[in-house]
Amino acid sequence: MKKTIRDFDLNNKRVIIRVDFNVPIKDNKILDDNRIVMSLKTIKYAIDNNAKIILMSHLGRVKEESDKESKSLKIVAKRLSELLNKEVIFINDTRGKELETAINGLNSGEILLMENTRFEDLEGKKESGNDLELGNYWSSFGDIFINDAFGTSHRSHASNVGIASNLESGIGFLIEEELDKLNLAITNPKKPFAVILGGAKVSDKIGVIKNLVGICDYILIGGGMAYTFLKSKGYNIGKSLLDNESLDFCKDMLEKYNDKIILPLDSIVSKEFDKDVTLKNNENFDNDDIGLDIGEESIELFKNKLKECNTVVWNGPLGYSEIEKYSKGTKDILEYLSNKNKIVIIGGGDTSSSAINFGYKESFTHISTGGGASLELLEGKKLPGIEIIDEK
Ligand code: AMP
Image (cartoon, rainbow, N blue to C red; front, side, top):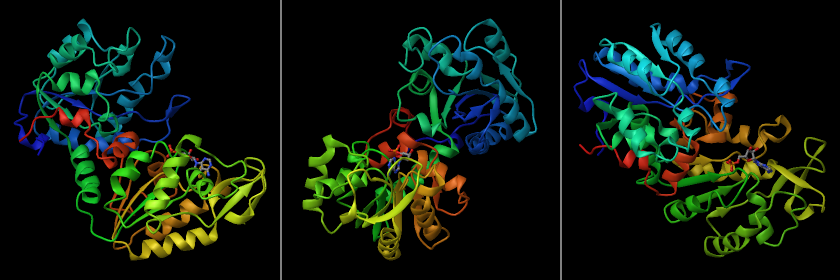
């Protein structure tokens, strides 16, 4: 078991908390503050326990000097301060005298947010490359390190692995919840257990299929990735997404797990993206049809299989759900699974955004905050940002 923030005496200690404030920003406005809200429990706990709090986060990618303006965390500090109803000191730098003086001047219960950790990527990817000197330097700011950025825990960066290598460390409440809930599904699922997979590419999901096919009862496949499976069965998929390199894998899986792998029976197709739509069975695709959502019969088939199941893990939308006319499959299955007496885990990235945007934020057992990280956990991989944390 990993240590958690509860395992430390935080009183008067300098506590570095790695949070995930990688929020979408447009025209200097935060479009969705969910990630900031999700970090509040750990930050409030640290305030209540009289820690001197140093927050670190990345925001997007910083490739050139001109990215700095749009990738500053200043606007996040303001939003955090509103949410906490408390001052958040923001230092517009990732190193140097001003930052060090501000940290040394912190009183118990005060909060400082450092500038975007990825500003350090400008000269030689120091943050993303887990530069030793940078990890050592940042760890000198604190006495204890708490990792609560689940979304980056599958990466070995200076702001997680680098700092944790030098300090006593634990996980925050958000990572604790992510691990509890995702492990609920993958280590000892209440059966029957279904995995729903969608999204664009089969190759991104091969690891999950391999890891879970043995323990689940069904894998329901929709989204763009379904068409490579259908093609491997000999169907004409027109101009739908095809992941040529995964064809043999799909064929092999269908041969071995014919009863477990459930494919769509029909699709919503268009001749041109975002133009007129038609409902077509797998057998009726024209050469110029593009499959962009699962159809009505598929939705019913998926619901029938899900009806039996007690645990459901879902990664990847069932259609091009950013566009209204291709979103019905994803919406109908979200609606069907919402508020049921089932363990339903929505596994990050586009699926979590869809669930939240379509109004299902409170309707499931868990909606993961980490796309890549939750996918890697479902693949059975160890996450370096969590592995490095002290054991109890
Ligand atoms: P992923 O990151 O692999 O989970 O893929 C998510 C993306 O797949 C989203 O942007 C979806 O719009 C897209 N997607 C889902 N279904 C389809 C489809 N049938 N054709 C093309 N793209 C799709």
